Image 1 (cartoon, rainbow, N blue to C red):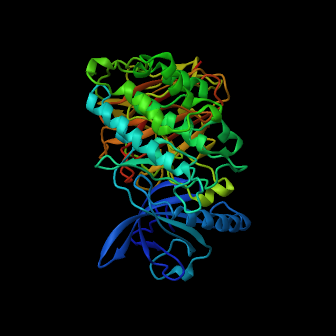
Image 2 (cartoon, one colour):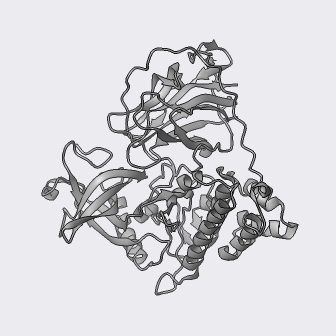
Image 3 (spheres, one colour):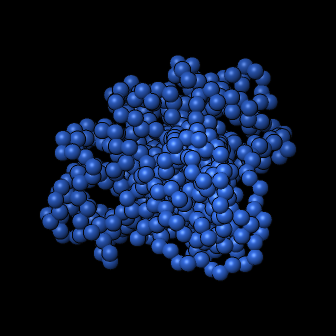
Amino acid sequence: MIDLGGRLSGESLHIGPDTAPDRYRLLRSIGRGGEAVIHLAEIELAGGSEPVVVKVLDSKATLTSEEFERISARWNEQAELLRFVHRPGVVGVREHFEGPPIHRPGEASDRAGRALVLVMNHVDGLDLRDWRAERDLSLPAERREIVRTLEQLADVLDWLHSGKATPSGRQVIHGDLSPGNVMVDAHGQATLVDFGLSKLTADHQTAEIWFTPGYAAPEVFDGRRTPGTDRYAFGAIAYFLLSGQSPPATPGLLADAMAALPQIAALDAERRARIAALCSADPEQRPLSLAAWVRDVRQAVVSVGQDVQDTPPVPAIPQAPPLPPAPPAPPPRKRRTGPVLSAVAGVLVLAAAAVVGVPLLGDKDGDKGADGPNRAGGGDRPTSQPSASGSVPSDPAGVSLTTLAPVAKSEYAWFDVGNATLSSRHYDTALVPAGPYEICDGAAQYDLGGGWKTLTMVAGIDDSSKKPTARINVEVDGASVWTGVIRIGSPKTLSLDVANGKRLAISYEDPGRTCGMGRLVLAAPTLKK
C-alpha cells in the first residue's frame, strides 16, 4: 500500500509517461494541494541524479472519470503554455504528461487508473515565511533585503501581466500568491514556485474558488482572477514582510493596517493613500505598476541616514501571561506521530486541479513565532482551565478542546489526546499529532457552534522530541487567527479570539518540508466564554 509520502515500506516508487514509466524516482512527499500530492523526486542524467519537483493528480482521488477527463484536457493546454514562461523569478516547467499512477519499478502495467503529472525544477531555499522569520526589521541592511525582495517580485509580476511571457502576448496570472508560494535561495533570488492556479487569460471566470486567507482579493470569492487579483495579494505579502504578521482578512482592514505601519505612517498623506490603494476592494483602484508602488515603499522603509531607531517595531498582538512554573513531573508517555496535510494553499497546486475546484488545504502563511490577528469561536459545554501543574481541573466557564471529537481531519495525520512535557513542565491533557507515519503534516477541524470567546493553550515541542520545530496554523471560519513556528524549549502561551466562530481548524507541518517535524504539543487547549 502506498502511503502519503508516496513510499512503499522499504521500496522505491516511480512515475513517468507511458513511454518511460520509471523515469522519476520519488524521494518523499513535500506537500499537498487538494487531491494533488507534491513530491521531491530525482531523475538519472549522464550517470548522476538531479532533483526535481513532481506534482501528481491520481484518477483514484475523489474525482469522477468525467471530471478527470475534463481536467486532463484543460490541464494539458495550460501546462503546455506554462512552458513558454522563461525568466529568473519563475519556476521552470520541465514537462507534463498523463501516465500510469505511482508504482514500483517495472510494475507500471500492474496499477489501475491514470495520473496527471507536472514536473518542475527544484528550487533550493526557504519559502518567504521562513525567510522573513530570519529578518530583523530594526536593522537597515535587513530592511534593504526586504525591499529588494519586493522589487524582484514586483518586476516579475509586472512582466507576467504585461503579456511578454508568452509569444501570443497572453497575460499570465498567478492566481494564488502567498508567502508559501515564493522561495528565496541562498543568493537572495525570489522565485514564484506555484503556478498551479495560474490563469493564462486576463479575465478567466470559474465557478470554483481557491484562495489563501488574507491574501485573496474580494473578487476571488466570485471565482474571478485578474492581474488586479495578483496585485492585491502582492500588497498583502508586502504587509507581511514589513510587519511580520499575517495580513487582515478584508480590504478595508488591510488598507488601514498598511497605512498604520510605522514606516508608512511617517509619509505624507498623498503617498500613504497611493500605498494603501493597492489593498482596495475595487480592482480598478489598485495601482497598475507594482514596480512604481515599491518605489514609494522604498522611500519609506529605506532612506538615507535612517538608523535602527528610525523604524519602531510593529506592536505585537498581546498574549496571555505565562502560566506559573510547576515542579518536575514524570516524563511523557511515548506517542505515535504522523505526517501532515498542508493547510494553506501555499503548496503547489495542479493547474488541472484549478479547473475542477479541488479544494486547497492550506498555505499557512505567517512569520515564525509571530502572532497573527485574533478572532474566535465557541460551544456550550463545561470545560477546564489549565492549573499551575498543567493538569486540567473542572471549570464551568469553558470546555477542553480535547473533549470535542474532530468533525474533519486529514487522511493520514490528525490530533489525538495525550500528555506531554514542555520545558520540564508536565501536562496531563494535550492535543498531539496522531498517525502511523513519520511526521510531515496534518490537520483537524472542530465544530465550535458559536458562543465561545477565547481559545487558550500552550503550544510547544515535547522535551523528548528529536526534532526541534513545527509550524502550526489556527483558523476560525477560514480566517487565520494565529500562525507561527514553535521551537523546543520555547513554548508559547496563546490566547486567541474566537468570538462567534463556527468551525475551528488547526493544521501543522514541518517548517523545513523534510518530514522531520518535532513532537508538537497543544497543552491544556481550553475554550472559554
